[in-house]
Image 1 (cartoon, rainbow, N blue to C red):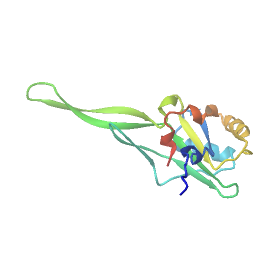
Image 2 (cartoon, helix red, strand yellow):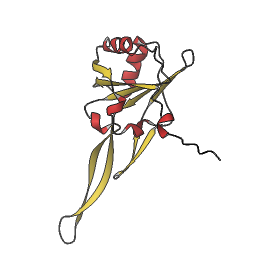
Image 3 (cartoon, helix red, strand yellow):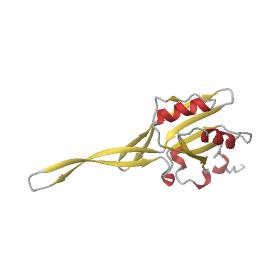
Image 4 (cartoon, one colour):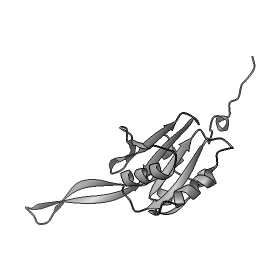
Length: 161
């Protein structure tokens, strides 16, 4: 009987590209401006991205575009969301005060300054990411856009959805 060894690295494929975007816009406005400049039509997804953390479950909205002609699937995701937790604190012996604590949660915590992430799935070697970034930089509301190196990400499991 032969022994077959399977390497996990054979199944891990990085057939997606990540773009970091710095912009002080609401997510729907950024999606609108990107739809104007690029040949995409981002639509708000009915399914949010949920990540379980110590404080509770956080939800990230996302905008999606299925490019059937090029067999690409695009995601526009905010990198930051807020979670509000209610806590009570005893002020005196017989009184308690309730207050809300707002905590910022990041999809990619190692990139805290990044406002939005574009994830493009099913890319190949011929995908021109540099020209796409140049087109994004023509949007005046975007202050910076650049490629994210996937090998340097510690929390790349948050991008599996």
